[in-house]
Image (cartoon, rainbow, N blue to C red; front, top):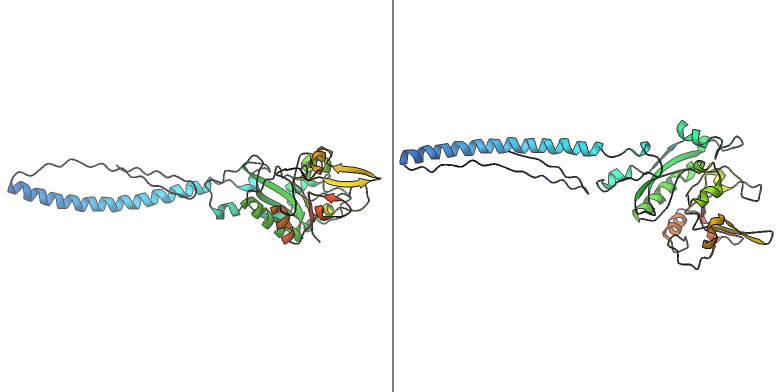
Length: 287
């Protein structure tokens, strides 16, 4: 009897075979010995053929089982942003498929329309891309993340978030700002990492770089924007006021020694934390 067990985990396949053997009698006479030898030779030949058939069957079973494992890998396009993904049994090539960008679909645009993409938006949809990545959550789980960015930085964004994920860089949340009605303050207060949002810079009539999809805010609650308005210090989001003190030892702070800073600046982005007029610690923009 042969039983084949497939174990999928970290790319390891294990086959366990169990064989049953029959008891043989002992020849007592010369004739019996001759018959026994002939029988033994025949049995060995049969056993060899059985072994060859068994090996072929085992390889077929393993191939079929491997195909079953392959089909159980979830399709990232079918998963909502924030979903937890079990990558423990995936190869590097399979994980790589979770990092990509594409044009704005009707489904994605239906979420954006009237929110981040209002009636007054002058940015053609063709200049925007929908990005899907994996990120390492504060809960130490792998999650699906989504962004809308300008096509001009889509390759950069995928490369950067691939590297952040490989380093287990913690990000708490990454969904479209439309899930917050395109309210930037609500999105920041939820510590949501986001990019495109057709809006002006708060307190001005100037379009934000976010309006072009050329800027991104990372872990904004812990990396607030600190600026002065009519002589008063303003912190956005207000819930992040405690984190305006950058002398605190907070694991989620972005500074010049941080991997996030290093990756974005290597790709040609500037960091709001380097500004002189204000400090926007969450903000990276390009162009």
